Image (tube, rainbow, N blue to C red; front, side, top):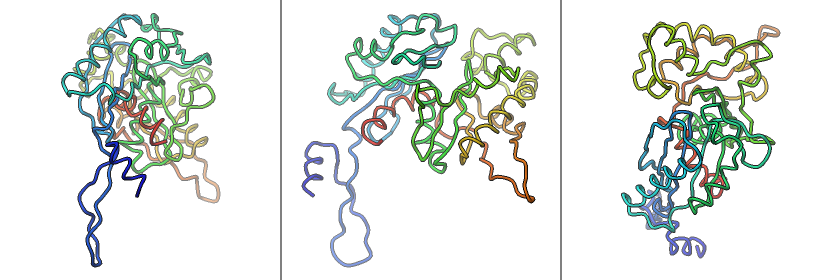
Length: 330
């Protein structure tokens, strides 16, 4: 108990309510993590917005903030994040030493040179910058950076489908199509941080990526125009005719991705998440077929195809969980 006593003295652990027991004697008190011992801020950088989340060490989401932003550079990002972090510190009266760090998710793939990400064209001014080093210096806090599909998979593993699926592939729908891979409860990044880049297999098959940007373009063809994905999602109507065209067109690409994921990973589930609305995710799922040739009348066990179960804005929440998961909970 000496170690436990020391951790309680340092306020990392605390004594909880006594645990019920069937036998005689005084029940032992529960020992639990002190949620106010440390806090993290999560950041999700999209093509049209920056979302942040503040969580405590118990995993409770204290606040989420969404800011619509277009055409920003690294200096603009730093200014925005400083303001968000300072607002959280003031509102929740956080002691600076309790702010454990910042997790960041950004859309794009790593190029194999440190934490340099190659994002879509709308994020041109953040392209190929060592953003992790820059933000660590400018925010004066430890920063962990990954792509949005991976951090969303972290959030889903702890707060969503990961509660029943130890192995799953997460599909992240936004301006592009990315993803994350979870095996035995742990996020798999791969050699260069690009595990889960599921759309990379589509061009050789002459298949278009089914993205929310593509849906926005289809709506524009129908005379329903939105300046960006965020505005489209704020007004989302599952009865838009473009939704039917989009899901039908996505069938072949997503069936290929799901079939490859099922064969390579043998997951419990394939999760349809990111910024996609739940009804649209379910309609996609209804269109998908996994290649599974039977032998002796029996095929392979197939993964469940499910909409994301974690709270909205999983990337910001997953990014906030990243420092705790990497440093404390493995």
